[in-house]
Length: 44
Image (tube, one colour):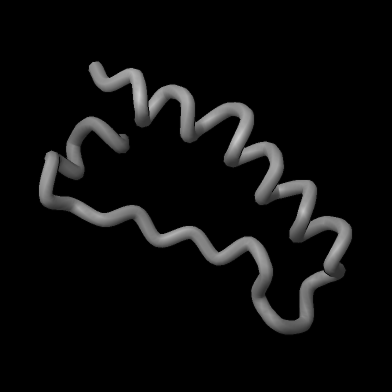
């Protein structure tokens, strides 16, 4: 899916939304950092 956004596209990710359990939110943010960001940085 991210490859269809294109170079000028934006990805909005809000793991620390109000009302969510903060620990769950931080787990989501760390997972994004570990699993998603490296793939975005690596490109296609």
